[in-house]
Image (cartoon, rainbow, N blue to C red; front, top):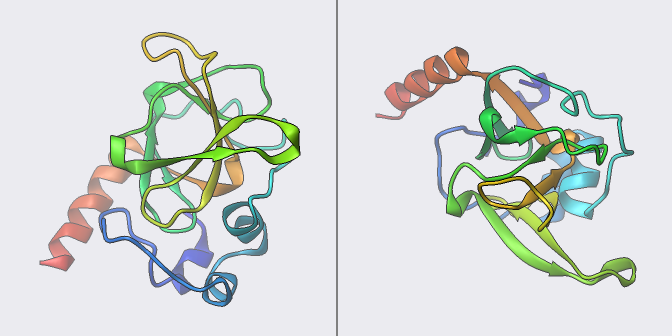
Length: 160
């Protein structure tokens, strides 16, 4: 987890409430690289993500708001240069938006909680879905399986 999340009041791995902040508010609480991807729909350079060939077991979260996005067992090596997954953690974790930028017809994927730009989904992935979620690693946080369970239980206890 990034230490900059401490100044991010909306970051939570358990809160499911939708997040709606102004661009000025996002700019204050997100690191510049995360802001560029999440809010300005940027793209990190291919092959630069620490998660591209990452093999740890756990859960990937939105770096902007903490929303659970993907489980590590849905990650696969696509050879595209960005972390790739074949299925989101739940139907509500991702929002799908048509993207007609750069003269291409693509489907953008956004965080289902804060609408951060994550990347794009393509129909050339492996079974069982046939989908390839091509995600900017900058917008991902990762928590190992046992650490995630401990953190989740701790947050649930403090919320009650």
